Image (cartoon, rainbow, N blue to C red):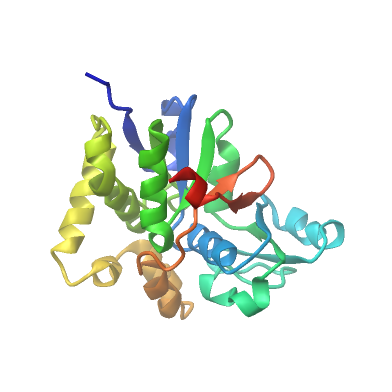
Length: 247
């Protein structure tokens, strides 16, 4: 009998050190909104997305990278000095095609830089849910679904996405991780309610971003499978995996 690879969920960057990421595909999750923006930009034709740790480094990219757009946020708002924000709706094809997006965010890009020794790092969101699930099943390796959370505090939207992936692909994996079971249970509960968006309305991050008038962003971010790409991190930038060659 062939042993199935493990699937685990890390609910916060503060817990990352508890997981062995060697020989593992790590999926970085930041639903509101970094990994949603990455999926949208790449599907709409961006050459690449460069995740940047600091605002200052991101601003400098404008001078050193050809055809580069600087973007991102701190605490939900566009950071001073950057050209654009962290919204998937800001990057339609007629704007982003052929350009490089340098992106810095409060939580998602930080977690991506924290993972040091994985086999592969990809990013996931509801916008590319099925593409991520198909990629993980095809690769057949150990998986860690890593939630960006909010300043190390567990958040609901990233947990729900981890649960959606777990529910979708669990038959192909060994799932003994309590965090994965918690995430899956929450996701299945949300499916019995009036929908993901309503399930999230009283969550801390939803209320935080709603105060900035970003309800439209959040509604889009929980709409599944709008951008069927798998963004893969090569150590410097995120590019689209050749899905047809992988699946």
